[in-house]
Length: 208
Image (cartoon, rainbow, N blue to C red; front, side, top):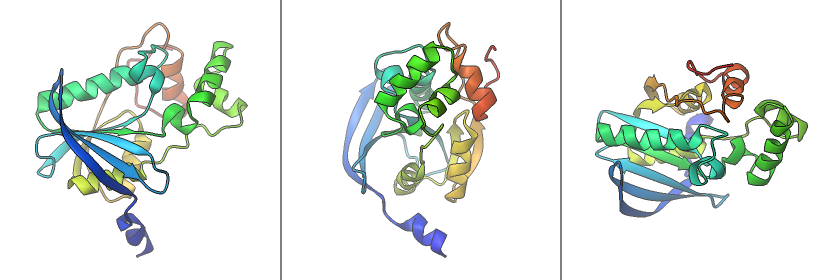
């Protein structure tokens, strides 16, 4: 009973909605504010996501990849791919989670971890050498957002089994995990195998 009460407790509020035309079609953009953190999460929807199974992507904020087009990670390419897939399907949800930079360590420590990676550490060991968690992200706010949107049955675009487990623990039905792998670059060939081998991500085409 306590778990059900926690699940129903409001932690996000929809504060604004507007149309957003993009290269991949016309989306509706919603802004959700999380309490008590004050984080503002961006959500893009297309079509009626309350009916049937919604193609869904929960994307963690990545300033370097999403905005600055860094090739050290696959984040920017995955964000673009999610928009394209939803556009082709004509219906779906893209949740852009703020506060998830560097799997939750923040931009400053992410750059410090990058410096250690330049010296040969992988993405896991770099965090540990800084005394930081390997992954401190929570997807509870995403679950509340999906519930507010009326989504219950999901085709989840992800390579990360932790995202599947997080939504299932919140009572969502994951009909399918849709592989969301993008091509490696010369700069990400060391990063992606670490995600696969040390973090358990489903990555089949990674070298190394």
